[in-house]
Length: 372
Image (cartoon, rainbow, N blue to C red):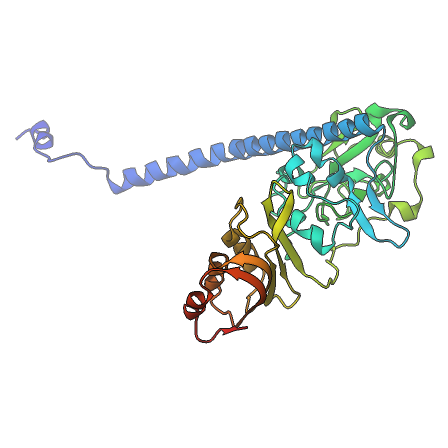
């Protein structure tokens, strides 16, 4: 029998072990060959996105200047050192954040309990995230952070610098990537001192694990700053010497920023009567994170734009609720969502004007829940 006949009688051709090994090695070599190119492509995309973020921030700052004839104050702080608001909040209305921006009360300190929920629910913070930074552990309090910082000679405490005061807009830094110690969005003190250089400490400008720092200049252009940047050029980026503020006005936030103790740990007001433009349900989670206060307001059957379940879900993220204290006016159906609280021990509704069959609702609660 011929050799060809033997081959034809085989049921099918199969790879030998050696052939499989050779194919595997070929795939590994291809992966090793293309991996650097893929990583470079990713880094280029991140660099482009970061550059776009800076350009958006710069455009917002210039729109603010066009409206008010000055750049926003880096941070508003009163004589008693009470922190109000930061330049990042001031320009949010120019960053397509108007719905969120309209909820902020600039007459109240930024970390007041009535304000904190706005920052915790901030959904317009993408521009403040630097995609070139691979990972940043989230803050325990849930507050978003800004990974870009302002030039402390232009954006500092209670500042009001105008374009006319800046002699060389094409060579003066406005904002840049921050290397570390990021402060929460809204917290006054989000600026860095150009004198400290870049990429040499956690409180300087820079980009962690990358040599090149992206910096936005006052004229709106974005420049790459690398370790080879001449020190004279770098120092000139701070701006005219005549603008240099005192050390006290350039002092930023303490790191890491710790939320102060407040009587009411968290307040949520997301259900709104659009006709009267006021919240009709307010929830407060007290510092023990186990006691929830609920004010239903005085509307008997208000329209629902956000469900009460949504409100409670937010509160349940921050504590194990065991005691609920209610006030105001509501229907029995508005109490139904309290059944979701598996560890509820006490429900106080004696101060509530309730419409509906209350006895039926109470009978459906766990026998371990005290109702008064």
